[in-house]
Length: 161
Image (cartoon, rainbow, N blue to C red; front, side, top):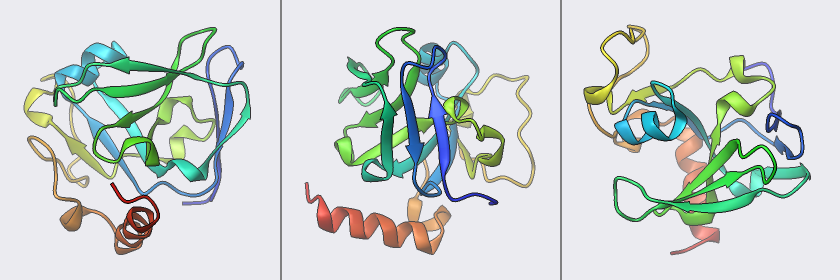
């Protein structure tokens, strides 16, 4: 990866942010919930510690939204154009942000590390043969790089549940 920081914004520019490091992991989710919420065939999320996500301008609103798990998610949206910028899921809570890669200026630098919930992907979406793909969710200990697993452990130590 050629950069360590990534700038992002909503469509109208009212909310701007910076990811101060590379993400922990990038997954492309093909579940029907992500399809419905994004209005597209999948959602591309860069998982990062929220403490590495810096607001540069504006303040998103957190919208409590249902999720397949039944535990919901908080979607950070621009209060003006309502674009989804990132989400917080029940598992890690607000400690981890699932940044929508499409809101990043450098979005082309963050291809997916894995495709998930491919059992419900649109049949015309062709998955690249060199990127892991799983029918449902994945085991992070199998797919995440060691450095990301270490960052996760450090995060959990700072933010115990």
